[in-house]
Length: 166
Ligand code: HEC
Image (spheres, rainbow, N blue to C red):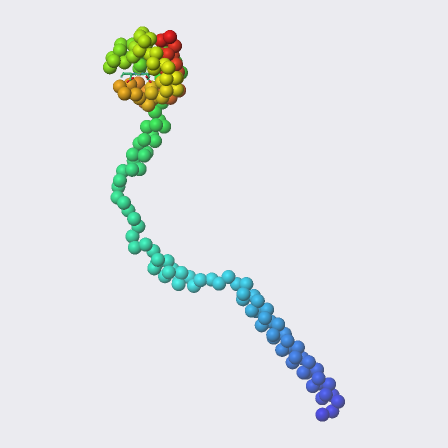
């Protein structure tokens, strides 16, 4: 082996070693990249799985009519205007609704012309009187039998009635 061969062998081995190191580096780089990949499901497998776990039948409870009832109730309460155009006119409301009993004494109602029928009632306090007028109380129908009256309308009417008594 002459001198030139020696130089060649030396460079050639260095080249081989360099290539080996490069190979190892790209192997590790490839492994590193692979780890960062989000594994994607085989789409056919996914389809088969979804078909397998599908419920055998959707639950159908039958036509219960509940939706219609709820809709009708919503429509009734939303669309219906308050009685007397929502006006807070106690006298108008009393003459339209309450006087049928509280002026005539029908159904043994306490008449506003009879203060003695009211002393015990008034002493319960205004809130109780109003609550009884709104929710009904024995023969006294809720809101005097006119549910489209607002709570506020009933309240001012009760207040007006109590003023008439005293
Ligand atoms: C169908 C008849 C009738 C109508 C209409 C009526 N009431 Fe009465 N109301 C009664 C009777 C009967 C009582 C007595 C109830 C009892 O004490 O058992 C009463 C009692 C009351 C009382 C006293 C409640 C208590 O705690 O003692 C108030 C207040 C009252 N009514 C307000 C009204 C108002 C306001 C209206 C109109 C929106 C009205 N009422 C319409 C029959 C009626």
